[in-house]
Length: 215
View: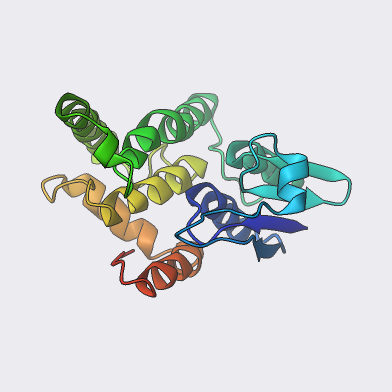
């Protein structure tokens, strides 16, 4: 099994963390990338398989898939244990909803503030995006008020939000320190071996360019 990834790809980090948690042996291959030209030239397999021409792309024999959520589902079918979707119907529905919201609602506001992108926003757009991020952090803190993980047991929802929130913090739009349940959750996540390995590599890569990032 091969996972095409990138050294600062949040979505690839999700897939790699999940594979480690599942004890699935996967060869991670970083495609050409640098901070100036990004993913150029495109890796031929990524270009061929993913219409968006983005990582992650997973190849497992005849199986060729892309998109971190689809990779989650494939890994869950491939290795049902340890389960990374919760056991009960209600908790699974919540985990899937939160995983989707992290990717589709939270992270798009985060990347608005990536270097070079924020300068394209007017003041109203900046304030609106910051307000949505603050509201998302507050809502997540409330969810975590009576549990260790977002959907009760550790799940793909936690992997997705941790990776996205990691990006938010290192570009300066992370949560404030007045959300204790969210802070405790992040500490708990940072202590997982899979997170230390995958996000640690990303932290080191960013650090090589003088960009400070922390687990």
